[in-house]
Every structure is written in structure tokens, then in C-alpha cells.
Image 1: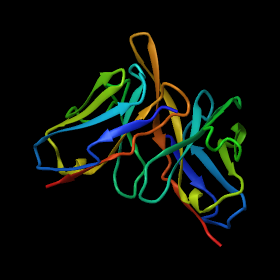
Image 2: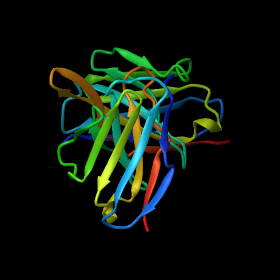
Image 3: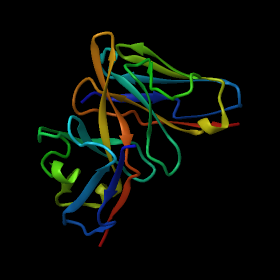
Image 4: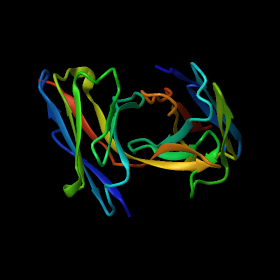
Length: 124
Length: 107
């Protein structure tokens, strides 16, 4: 079955760039939208951005000035870059697949598959 | 941004109890509401979309209701494996915000 796996440094220094990769295995990266979501320790979930297989993106305005997401379909990978990190960016970062469901003729989407998440700590 | 609130923030109930968690949006989101379950140390698991449509494989004791601004997740017959934090999420308008979560424990 399809699995998502986040990878990247677990420790990033303040003011540096956080870079993560999500590898999709067991299925195609095409025809789906893919998202990054984060969760500070002991806190709730924050949607960061999504991208589709053709590179169309949508960013959370609260992070848009610092975030770039991209996709390399040939490697079945998506990536996240977050610039100028601070301690407030310490979180578990998840990648997730966006699926679509229908009620009658109306479509609704949801995150049906999630990676296990990777903890990134921002500290000197 | 659409703000999502949940109540209660935590609850403790007995096995077999009926448990209801409410979620409120700061503006109407029609039925564009998802529910997720997160167990400690794990990634969230998707439960319900379109406010009331159960994901395949999710036990039928879980149900969702509501539209507009007020929604509910009900567990009809709480089981030990339901101990988790439950989050609602609106997918009506970007940014796609989550509620703060409701932690469910067994009494």
C-alpha cells in the first residue's frame, strides 16, 4: 500500500533553513495533491501548504513568505523548505496525501494518508 | 482565517459511554468539515469527511453531524482503543485550519 516517509535533519540552528523530503512509495505521486502539516510539541495541527503533481501550490499566508514546497515526480518526492527558522518552528512535520470523496455530486477533500512525521528542533 | 473551536478540551468517560465532541467554525463552512483521531506519538488518522461521511474501515460507532458553523463527533459506545485526541478541520477556505483538539480518556 502507499506509504509516506518524511526525512531530514532533526536539528536546525536558528535563522537557518529547514529542509525536509517526503518520499511516496507503493503508489503514484501523480493525480494527487500533497500537503505539509506541522504540530509543535504538545500542541495542535497547522496546515503549511499543498502542491499537486503539476506543481500548483497553495500556502498558508502565515508562513508563505518563508516556505517553498516542490515536487519531483520522477523520484516520487516532495520537499519543504522553511527559511529563517526560530524556536517557534520546532514541531513534528508531517506530509499527507489529499484525497477526494463525493456526497452525491459534491466533492470534498481530506488528508487520508499521513507519514509518521519527523521532529525538527530549532536550537543552537 | 476561519477559526475552529472545540469543546470540551478534554473529557473522561467510561467504556461503553456515548461521547460527543463539538466543533464550531467562526463562519459558515457548509459541510466542509473533517475529523481526525490522533493517538499519542502517532500521526493523525482520518475518520470522517463532509461532516458526516465515514471513511471506509472506521468503526460504525463513530458518527459525525452538523453543517454551517456547528458540528459534532459522536462515539456511540466508547472503547479503550478510542483513547486519543480528536481534531476537526475545515476545508472550506484556505488556510485549512484545525480545531485545537479534544483529548478523550477512559475513566
